[in-house]
Image 1 (cartoon, rainbow, N blue to C red):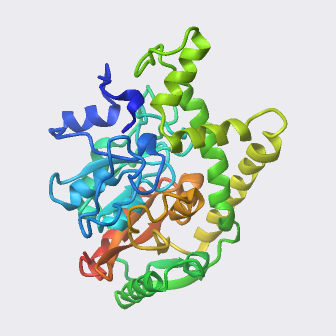
Image 2 (cartoon, rainbow, N blue to C red; image 1 turned 90 degrees about the vertical axis):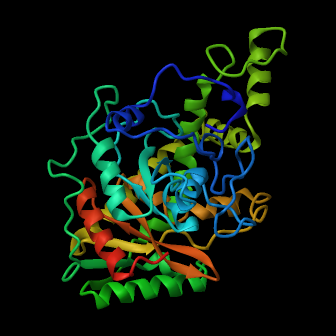
Length: 389
């Protein structure tokens, strides 16, 4: 988890995803760098140093799965596995020019994953093509008795794709093409939309009015779940244990203050606050109510379209240190990805060309459980864009 609190820890078992891949013949090459416990959008929050963007080593590769994305783009491995709690597969895919798939919530077992926010955590592949994403999803998807949140997979292979986008309808999310997004990114996404139209796709404008609250909702629900999930790192059961402290409470305090970095502590504190007595109704319960409204917005948005599209991130990869002093600015990197996690729908990032030498990602989203349909549409768009890299 790129955290000092687990430095040197040897897990006693493998995650279901890893076991499935190894049974299919895959070879685990290495564990990739990431933001500690998935807390970040730049891989600058790793306790073992940052990962650099292969396109420009002065810039971040995105996060939290920045190492996974960089490894694929550099050709170190044909695919990698990332986790996407609020965009941690798709945003680094956008910043590095790779393909990042966030499956429907529950389609891939979370057994063995280092938990961040259990109601939005999803495991998925980072690859260089839609075909490779489908191949990996075919292996890792399906029910797992050790994860009761898993759902049935499609009874047709995920590699059996219908990539004909002629006559298919795509909804451009109005709120994602508004102020706050780099005009050059918007221009590149508009060019991608035009390419879809030229390939026979039908383009519509779709408004999701509640989506503007998605980031605020996410940064209440996610820290609440983080504070609960990270309570297991106490220095007693496993992981780092501080030699300081004269009693149990002091041992907890020293272990967690020394083992967790500042961003992890920030999220634990926010989560503890929004779930505390007197504030849970005001923040956490209200956030869950708005989450339902966001889900309803997506359901309405999908009524007349096959997929929703827009930018994956509001900017291209930013420079190291550019956002580290301002947590809110860093959190805004997730503004276009968190809504799909809150709604539990599948989403994918496809390379849509470059701006000033830096990749831009097009995000495509589909209804829950329509992962195969999403991959087919994404492959059609990939063809229409001519394999933009």
